[in-house]
Length: 202
Image 1 (cartoon, helix red, strand yellow):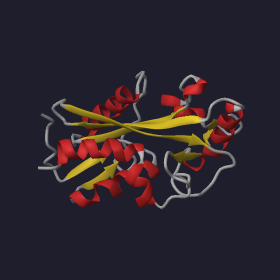
Image 2 (cartoon, rainbow, N blue to C red):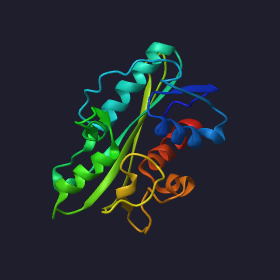
Image 3 (cartoon, one colour):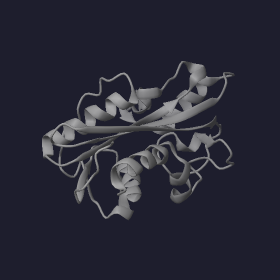
Image 4 (cartoon, rainbow, N blue to C red):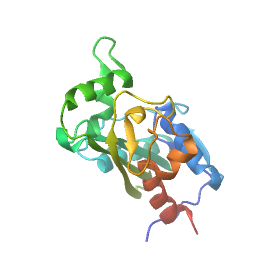
């Protein structure tokens, strides 16, 4: 039986504004006050896990250890099986532009498109969500959404690799979808449903 979340505030252990905004919107119905690692000036731990779940747990445990609040961390990325699973857990690092040393997803998407060439363009987004309590207890859940990678890019919504991903059964890319439509089917939404059902519902 999963532990129930009974506090009225938590920390989203991320410095990614897009990710924090998305999680804040998903938690809105539960009346939880959400802080981000950036707001609380928490450090960013070294993510040296080998899976999305391991890296999510590293981040949630680090944040709750620093601030003493229950912390929710997400580790997510795009997996392309025909390329051996890249960029996978390195999805953010894969998008670092060598010319600027900054994260640049336009660069990352073009790099991925070029690497794909004539390879199979099936892909999936994976998301692990880890909820950590100050006493060391952790609950972790994983979700996925499968689809195809497209080129040229479509849409300015979302963040990351969204403009090049079309989910199975849909015509619009994640970059073209309204937030509510994406939230209904995304990898994060799938993981979130498991988290909510296990930890937030009575």
